[in-house]
Length: 184
Ligand SMILES: [Zn+2]
Image 1 (cartoon, rainbow, N blue to C red):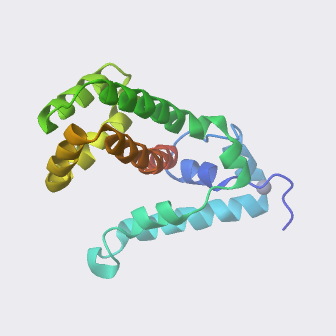
Image 2: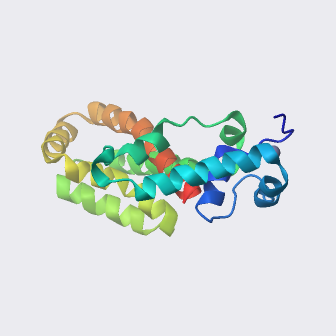
């Protein structure tokens, strides 16, 4: 068991789901010729089959998502520009959007949502999906919306702080989205 170039988990996941590997283009060929990587691929495949066939109440409904969320990225994955492209674009969009929001004097909650929607509409499909997260978060927290809007109307600096605090959360969501895309 000493494969010189062990396949990255994200590539093994891609192979199992029938997608193109992200990091090693020849991952499928390698797995068929390397005993160690072939075994890992088979183990992933069996896990996938088990997850698909398992009784719905055999495990919590969000188990699969939790597994995806908990698996750490390897050093090579972390360095891969492919996986970071979307989060970087989202972070840039968030910063630009936040700056724009702060430049516009006191908006109501619904005006804020319209502005975010318009912003999102001007980006490509991928970024549009990722850029929609503040709106989704916003809509899921109606109480927070009104209090935030009231805060924004009163105190611009506090609003800036609140928006900046949302950026790491957005980064995390974007990372999760990239991971889901990568493993699909
Ligand atoms: Zn190998």
